[in-house]
Image 1 (cartoon, rainbow, N blue to C red):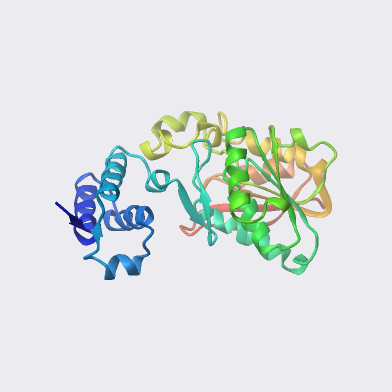
Image 2 (cartoon, helix red, strand yellow):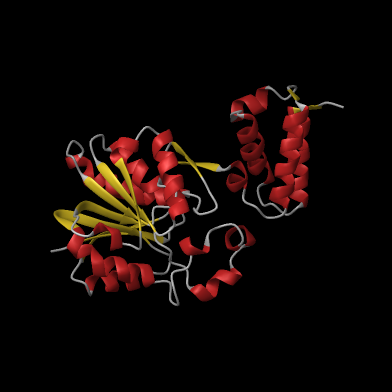
Length: 285
């Protein structure tokens, strides 16, 4: 018995709704559209399209995974960020919309220098989304991606290759500044792990069972990464350079204190789409 696209989407919506998914309609579009390569307009206008047997089986398996708590973009294996698409892996976080604010803040500060051969390092790069988004807007900049996870670095390299930026992208395996001895950068950027260790077991199942712990766990108070970055950044920052970091919603004052203690001054702080403190930019006086 054949099933049409419209019928499949209706079944998805109902199953997701019954399974407690908050926005079943949106997730249906993400999963069905992503799996079949259809945009929103096509899903609205081609409801009579017959879904092939293989595609139907694949979609039903995806639905089962979602009902078990796996996030939709993890199921698809990719997610859009800053107008680009990034492959995900078990070793990487999903790039999320609030992190685009970090990219935007860096780009605005670099606008007068867009034509310069800038050097950027992304600490804890994951998918490479932050660094590659910056390189996509800075045509002759070069970037170094650092991550403790070699699997995450491999994913970032795949994304650099797919986006045509491999020649301006370099991956380095190690902890924070460890593999960067003697190198200086115009921009040091990071969205580091910032969740206190004790909070992780209480996170939503989508996060605690599907995101890599290495990219979540910020230590006892969630601030270990900021201490490491602030302590090492001065030796790796070019004369007119700056450091830009994403933070947890309640960490603005403590992160600012950590950087001030290392001789930095706060240039700018930004909030995310929900009005929470999210981005801070520092420089040396």
